[in-house]
Image 1 (cartoon, rainbow, N blue to C red):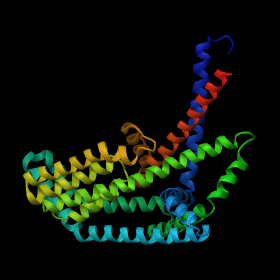
Image 2: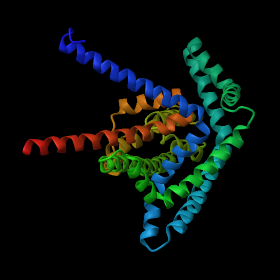
Image 3: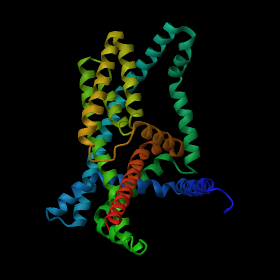
Image 4: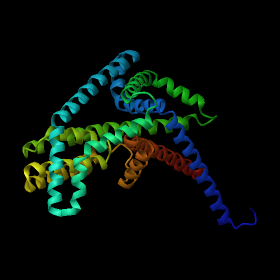
Amino acid sequence: MHLLPDPVRRFAAWCAVLLLAAGVGWVGVRLCAELRTAVTPVLLALLGTALLGPLHRRLVSAGVRPSLSAGLTCVAVVAVVGGAVYIVVAALIGTGEQIVSSVRDAAKAVARHFGAAGTGLDDLAANARKLLGRFGATAASNVVSGVSVVGETLAMAVLALLLVFFFLRDSGRAVDGLRSLAPGGTADTVEAIARRAFAAVEGFMRGTTLIALIDALCITAGLLVLRVPGAVGLGALVFVGAYVPYLGAFLSGTVAVLVAFADRGVVIALWTLGVVLAVQVLEGHVLQPMIQSRTVQMHPAVVLLAITAGASVAGILGMLLAVPLTAAAFGVVQELRTRHTGAAEASGDS
């Protein structure tokens, strides 16, 4: 090695570091995939804890015991999430047939205008349920080994809810445990990094939920004014899709425009497109800077790459978890950069 030029040795050292990091990351991903029934509830519980943490802290500051506060918070989230799921499912069930029929009619119209070029889209719309059924069966056979998807999902949901309770109640103990596991002299740094990462996830979850609600209400109101069929169901799709940044908004907006085109014609479809674009401009230039100004700001390209990587690793669940985990990683990098800059300035002054 000493015979090699200095730039070559640096390049070799960086290659070794990158290969080691890639190997550790690959092993970590494989372990998470093998232990998905345990890892998934933990990740979901962390997201739930980040979203519910402010409510728990307010109750504790009001004099409520931590255990009772965590229990009340979990009961509240069950009521809110259960009610929201009921509303979304009821809206989709009530308007699902109409939305699917409208999309199919839109595909047929495209096929008539573009001839053979639109035939594939028409066939896709006609066979959508069959394709979804085959995909669901394949996914179920790969994910579940002799256990039903519904049973596994319910078990993970219950476990995640219990973990949320313990995470909320024992948050102080978690910090003490983290400090005890840190190597000598790094406890403060480890705690600061953990707090910065959790704060990034906490801000992302709160901001995304509020933005999703505003987007859904605005688009639903616009669709109701335009008398687009299935407006409530389409608004529910917008709310759910908002948790997958950019991609979710694009897909839900496309469905809304297709439904308007099939049932109300080109003019109403263009108005619907205008409503969707206006809401997206409002989100990008007003809501995002105002609501998520205190969270980690990521470039859209980074978000899209994170969503793609999450989808390739864990499907829909990976798409939902990719962005908050990336936000946590950005928070860790910013904290390390801040501490490194501060240490460099301190050494320079001395």
